Figure 1 (cartoon, rainbow, N blue to C red):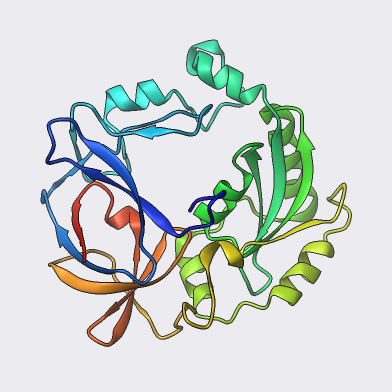
Figure 2: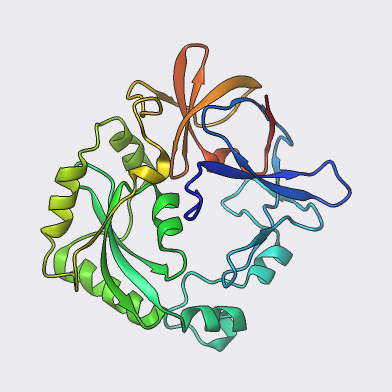
Length: 268
């Protein structure tokens, strides 16, 4: 999800070239063919520069097993990001992450519908990207902190004081997509957490998903846990990592995580 151009897109790698080419492809309303490849393996998704927010394909086109890992060891080390950074010594944090952690971070409350709210943190240049990749529909900025450590401390304090969670599981997000999202109620519920915020910076994130009448989320979708065979479909909507497809007159939902590194894509 692009926080500047507000275009629903995905990054795709052309691995048929001697040097892999990564391109940004708008996908909403596109007719596409998805085909599973590689069987019990998947391609490394490459590196991500946490400071410049630029990603690059894996230069070695490395194959990795079907685990929760997305990167080969070399690309993981080059990215240099350890999400469990608090309380870790210098041997556990890269020089690049030291710079990253020293920069301002936001603490936010994200709303997913039906009074389901989580607290989280985001690098100051990546607030919208962080919210939309999670599939949040509205948000409230609690505070802009001077660094990641201050933000993490405040996040954990909010969890303890208010009982607001710092994690919403994918299964819950999918269930919430079946219900109509009420923006007005969501904003009231976020503002009701009035002891947690410095100001009333509310964000309506639906515009980033282009959820118009034409591209509304159908509530009668069925979930696909894997792509078992080739399908030709149309992209109906994308909210966070949830990709909703129109296929043979029916709506299917599949997580982008189920496709990354192991799917051939043809856009017609």
